Length: 178
Image 1 (cartoon, helix red, strand yellow):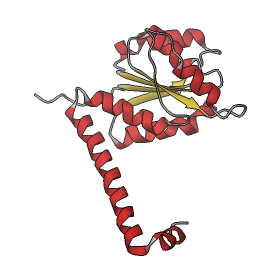
Image 2: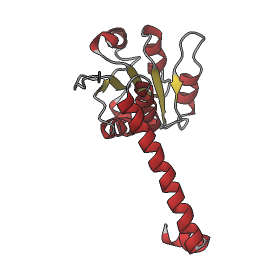
Image 3: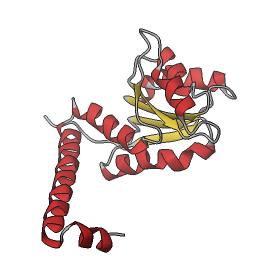
Image 4: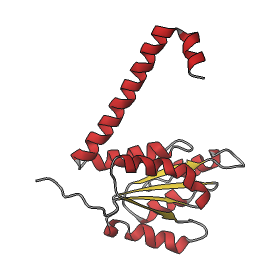
């Protein structure tokens, strides 16, 4: 029996500040392309800690199955969320002005044993969206097939570029694609 699809959000895309939204939009766009229902909002680890705790603790009961959390600077949001929910949390380090996101990366990736956060590259929100749909795909063939199709499209794109380089030669290819 097939699962009935609903518009109830199953992925949460959260971030510590509205300035993080342009980066996180790449995750949202991938979720949209796969037809994944999501919710998105600002949840600041430092400015709204009580909201963070309530949001993360109630996520599962609201139907959320994966949380994508983007944060810059001290970047405590993903780890704090992971500390209060058993749901999978995907952290996206946001590029910061002072340290170019290295501070965010270290903050998210250095979680203590027992509080895992799947950490993407600095600014890697698109990969966070792909990872979220991949996680959903472990129990939903439709999402599994969408990620498989996307990866096949990537393969075809690379093969097309290889053929064009072979046809044009490297110098002409570079000139054409500037």
